[in-house]
Image (cartoon, rainbow, N blue to C red; front, side, top):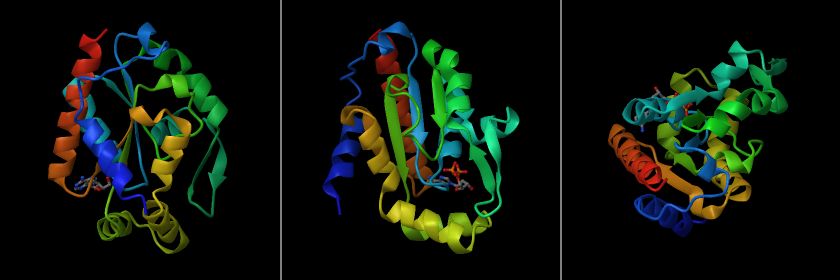
Length: 197
Ligand code: DAT
């Protein structure tokens, strides 16, 4: 299912010279990047390394929701806060307009499309992801749902439905080497973006 597509997108990730800016992007001097993917694919670890390499600001939406109480309470079944998407978007509007942000979240369809210059979807092999999620204490339906989410490439589909296909990039995140390579590739893209201003 769709094996050719992520490969094309992955190759596109190396094409760091072709930076085409949207009207909203022309207003900012640094880009906004969304790092998305199923829980456990490495969004937070990658975003944090990327923030260090690029000096962009890492915004972990899960932490923001908790710290600023941008939620509608606690979901006992899923064991997580029920995110209030409107409150999150209001909270981030000014900061995103300014640019220079790496947003880290396991969803992407409720952010305004104009916010992002690059959308990175991290992907991890099922067996590797399974071990990471078990390690994190996931079990039962929560574990099953997340593994299924990865098998069906739900985040990649969501990203392609929500953003222009040319800004969406799928990246493998199975090993530390993959992660280092991803950080290098995205850092090069940031440099190209900034110098194209
Ligand atoms: P996420 O933010 O997507 O939930 P994470 O960054 O918290 O994921 O990573 C989950 C765990 O997996 C954490 O212990 C770090 C490890 N990990 C993430 N990406 C990895 C990679 N590419 N190679 C090896 N370990 C990785």
